[in-house]
Amino acid sequence: MKKLLLLVPVALATWFCSSATDDIAKGPGSETTNGLALVDGKPASYASVALRKVDFKAAQAVEENALVVADAYADENGLFDVKVPADGKYRLTVVHDGVAFSKIVTHGDFAETEGAVTDTVNLVATALMAGVVDVPEGNSNVWVGVLGTDVLVKSDSNGWFAFPALPANDTLRLYFVDGDYEESLGEETLYMKPRESVLKDYRTPDPDEGKVVVLQKDGTPAAYATVALRAADAKAEDYVVQNMMVDSDIRTDENGKFTMEWPEKGEYRLTVVSDGFAFSKVYDAEDLPELDTIKLSATASVSSKVTLRSSDEFLWVGVYGLDVLVKTNDVGAYVLPSVPAGDSLPIYFVTADSLNELYAEWNTAAEPNSTQFLNPVKVLQDFESDGEGWYLNTDSLKKGTEIKPAQNVKDGIVYDSTRKSNVFHGTYKLANDDYAWALVGTAFEHNMKFSEIDSVVFYAKGNGNIRLSLENYVDPSKNLKAATEWISLSKDWKRISVNPAELCVGVATTESCFTSWSAVKSWVKQFHIFVQDGSEFYIDDVTLYGALF
Image 1: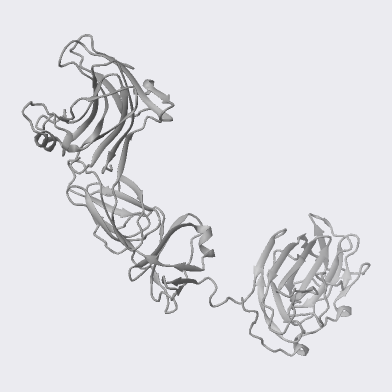
Image 2: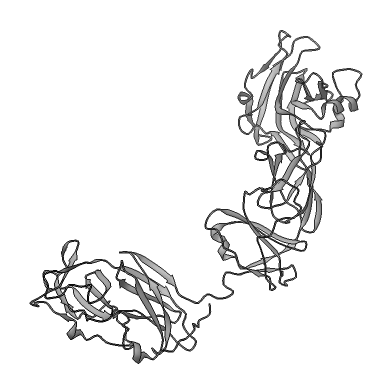
């Protein structure tokens, strides 16, 4: 902060004046009174009373903590006499043990001593005020007073000062004088409520205060860079392709500096972009005013994919807090052409038909100055909670076939010390029939396009065989299933990874691997794991690689 205010020389002889106290007020015991001082309806006995010209300032630099040096005192009944001159405005102040009354009055405002009317002044609790002001160069302090009162305090070398008690419920004028008590440094208006405590900053704003400096990677100013502030969870306002990271709210100046009015609460993403370089980060609103320097780094291009429903032609893809918005192709592939690197990117997806309905979310990151293909991963089930959405089933027509737990996958979740996590444990018995079956699995809410998945991975153990099958037993116009051959299990956990090219078993014995998968892959409705030739099996961490929905 600069410590210099515009100094306006004023001849103190013209504005330092003393009040003629003998002509203004009389003390207790006066024969006539025109004022009554009360505190909560009771007399303010022996309260101090003073009348000063409205522009009165202390005549010399002497510290005085009292609001006024009394001209007179009220009597034991709170009665006092004050004579307001016929011309001009005056500040009447009455003080008594932590309470005070102060008001600007004229001759016509206050009752005449000869009349029968007595003006009542109600004293209220004082207020506490502290502040800071610029200390001019060559000075060690600043003097601060209140016009129309006797109070005068001295700041420290940094400009900090305090008034232990000031009148409430009236507009006051503070005045500031240099350390030599020769030159006026200006005035400020102040209004406070009873018992209020305030802190005021009267320093001259630094031209660069509050400005954020944006630097390129080499440390040079990022002149005329784009600056934007968005709510951390903001999505694009218009659903049209927008390849720019953000539309500009403001731009930096030629020196790479900018100022912005910061919000008071909430989380916000601040983004700055300049010629292939960017900075983007989410802040709590309370931290934004503390920003002083931002350094840009190279952006990245991100290519990835999302799993579409069979009914979707494409999805919209954006990043929370940015304006960028792109479309996928018909199999869910997309490219975000220029995004911030090195920080988590919260990506959102919405369908063309329901723009306000969230389809999926994904957090990822990219390295600066790169073009990266990022492969999503979808955990279908890890059995760490209650196995929600998963079920067990058997061919009810084959008498003697059973699987346990009979109804609820949750009842089969157990802790496994080898995997150090919860897993699913089931037992089963199949009828003596080639077509008897038992399974555990899930059904998707919609038909899904799984044509772009990379693999299915899960862990299993047991004493029989296991088979993965992706199916559609809803739409009779589609092929029913694409399944693996039977995979043998043992007492040890086995990682089973299935590439779609291994889904060779369909409903017809003459189908090829290509035929079985190609007919089902864009219309997958069920995900099933079948068991046979044993009595128990364990399943854990069922994961789709290259899928997101």
